[in-house]
Length: 624
Ligand code: F6R
Image (cartoon, rainbow, N blue to C red; front, side, top):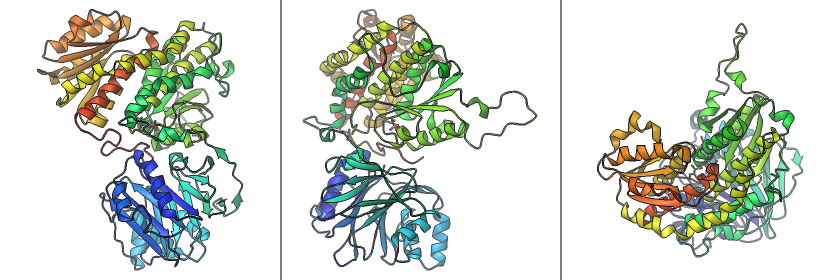
């Protein structure tokens, strides 16, 4: 999604901005731009479709765009195709204001009509240019008052960073439902959509909230509420390692992050397991008194985070016996949103809406902590009185801040669009949490599970060492047009994740099925040479999986089986077998997903795809 950075300082702004935008490239974009207030007070803009390098060449790395305050943007198109004209920043018709925007202005058509009636014309197809002209139309010489007036008329989501003609020492910003942080530097101050853009300049940040308006100069960052009262913000110290944004010798961030998983999982679990295998989740507040009344747990997320939820459902139901529903955050928010019919006062049974109440625990899973649908679902369930617990990677992100409790994964910054180390870290937390809840409820602890969890990092290391086997399979199937992934029980979410990894970066049409579903339709797609990857790690389901594998094989499929060491009968059933080391059966996703990540990665490489920046995708999906 769009990346934003703004700078006000003592140095030239454009080189800082281009450097910050480079650190945001991982989010996915189609065009980039920069604008400054020149020493003469005029606004100067350069922007272009394509990679940031095009903009770098055009501006000689920013040297041609002179001014000490400026704003920059990488765009992920929503309104209007990727083009030079639709790229941000956008300047108002009379040249009074220029801005960059992340999000969507939902009522831009109505606002455009008002502006057109007042003589404004538009060059681009974007909703953003409408905001630039709104600022121009209402400008009264006081930027803060003008911004306040304009945002009261906007509907939707936005991070806006704005510069004004004639104001050579300040930039302004505001957010609503999309992220924005301010960075306190030595030679100037910043705002950005993402901590990653700023960590090389400063560790001191302000986490900005919705409707807070900031005025940033070289000396200070002033934050105002919607009524323009000055607010005192606490400094938030970011402890990210700058190295996490470097490839450190790997060809791609995705490969680096696959290899970082032993460290990521170790960091995530080590301080949470005590010497006698007790589980230490100090800062969460789930005690017996609360848990004994929990009637249902919902787990919500999007994409890979949702698949972690599906695996967590198996773990929690098995260990705690509490019914768990997993839902895509984008669907759930409308299932239980305000449009759910209100309870009929004459009806004495339970209403659908009342299924969420104080005895509902809602677990939200998100790497970025900024996914728009997950945030909306979180806010919705809070309205119904549910208790919320999030599993989040980015410290201080919106989901982390707004949940009642948060457990941070300690994966470090994940740069590649395709999630890998965040997913295994989330799985580790989910399995720890299942065990934690079970013990709080008075069940005997499964100490063997915790012993096995402690061994997972070194087992992943082993799997990383044997990646050339998977690389050779990926090369062999590099021309496959379609692939099917099968699994039963907790292997099913792994199959889902394997299919997503393959499709999102290699553009192979990949589908995952619960293997029992095959005969209900999908098996008609199997023909000679179709690639099927079957995950079969669950002892009680192994024979059933082997039967399903026979069914696709007898229709011509070529089958790769991912199974546990010792399951040698797989050699007969499949064409290729990949063994994962023995672990507790609940924990197998932490190991079986590794070859599938490798398969996705090496397939993309074999096909010549841009692994870290897959087409049409963004790292953090901050619009619905
Ligand atoms: C897939 C992937 C996405 C994310 C999804 C949720 O590799 O990265 O499917 O898992 O967009 O993002 P977060 O976890 O940031 O909420």
